[in-house]
Length: 205
Image 1 (tube, rainbow, N blue to C red):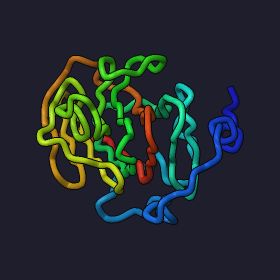
Image 2 (cartoon, rainbow, N blue to C red; image 1 turned 45 degrees about the vertical axis):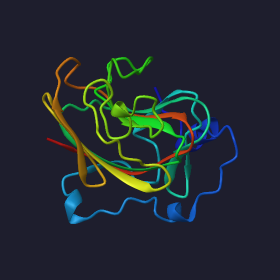
Image 3 (cartoon, rainbow, N blue to C red; image 1 turned 60 degrees about the vertical axis):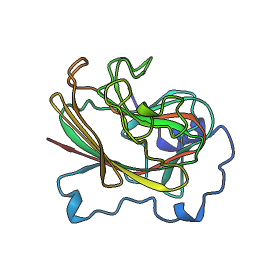
Image 4 (tube, rainbow, N blue to C red; image 1 turned 180 degrees about the horizontal axis):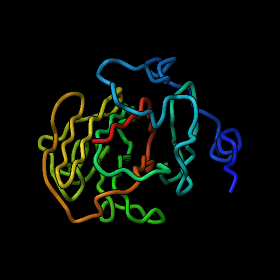
């Protein structure tokens, strides 16, 4: 089946006018490789969304080389499955945002923290032990770091049942869990607030 063009998909997802970006977000969306990125493949480099498909009605769109959403609810899901990997993601959220990075998803029609591993981005989560920096219902974080209002970097490693998460260079989670599938797609979540992603890259382990 022929894939729709990125222009037609962008038109479909852009249900509202794009909001102005903060100065911190301008002209920095395109992925810039460094020696630390050797062996990585870009999943989002600021140019297109060819490696992703939408689930739900979040208004994902490209703006100034960034991937952003601010209305609706849903996910962008990779078209490929991933098993053992190191994933690096830069993100900007406002203080009210509810987002996350889901890995090893097993049900793409109903992605939840019970059928995928959710590395959370949620500064105002009622139970902060599973807020930003945690893997929901698997590994708590204490104290919970705050991500709102600034650019942040996640470095996420899943290898077998071992899981390690770094936020802005600080380890927030290291644990083991094998309750879910050992492989699956990766999903970026939008649930509330303003969410922006850039420089999404992955390396197989």
